Amino acid sequence: MAQSVAPSVKMVQTDVLDIGYEEHGPTNGFPVILLHGFPYDVRSFDGVPEPLVDAGLRVLVPYLRGYGPTRFRNPAAPRMAEQAAIGQDLVDFADALALERFATAGFDWGNRAACIASILHPERVRAQVACGGYSVQDTITPGNPAPARFEALLWYQWYFNTERGIAGLESNRHDVIRYLWDTWSPGWQYSDDAYNRSAPSFDNPDFVDVVIHSYRHRHVNAAGEDRFLEVERQLAERPVINVPTIVLRGEDSGFGAPSPNPAGDQARFSDLRGRRIVAGAGHDLPAHRPDAVAEALLELLS
Image 1 (cartoon, one colour):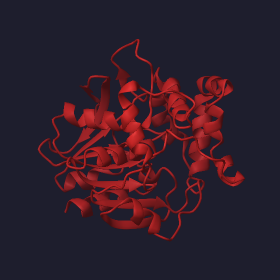
Image 2: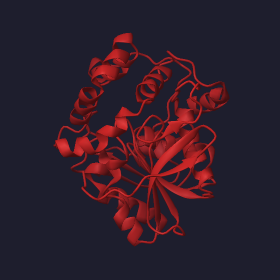
Image 3: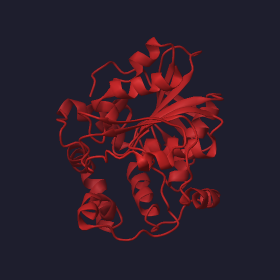
Image 4: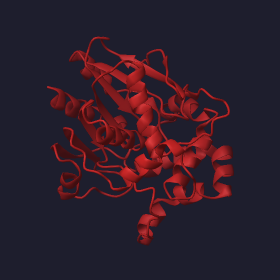
């Protein structure tokens, strides 16, 4: 991960959350929102803002619900984190900052939020860099068993759907997270310093509840929020994304090498401007190849 001095954390209030975020560049620049995933935080993007700021862009890097300084405003609210909620958080964040239009780049949960915003609010998303491709889930229909080698890669999801998994994540969260970092990016050597810069984000008091709900809801083992029932039904159809998009896929992902065939991405993104298999990158692609993320954004926004 790039080592740079992090800017001070700012806060913005939505109906549901107090969202912590970092900001780079001129306040009058076109806004680009960078969205981290599980189990990472804003430090994954440390190498991305500089070339964007040099191009006059405003870069915003929020902490997702359950991470870092972001907090639920209602102490009694259930700590839910279905995909529709994460997508709505992104739109709420933009609304709170009075951003009429914006561009996004994200991976894992952050990419899912960006995909959902592009589907539900295409008029507001000028461009999207989708690290990992299309990421919207069918949370209505229980999935069928996959071949054993794929099921094994998702061990953490099955673990989080057990009571033992709750206790394990609560008691051993840093051990679990560091193991996932290493196995999801097997060609990348994370230093202890790199992990320690992100580690405080996972001590958020809502982290465990948010993670557990996310992975239970997606496997139809936990109810979601009533306000998102119709949205989840819509997303279950896995709609095509129509905003200008570049897909980046890490060549060294611990989930398996990406297919060289672009047909799958072409079917999900109607305005696919590029699809790149990025050498030297694992699942945490922005941390490993920030240049690839910045270049894709600049290409889309030029």
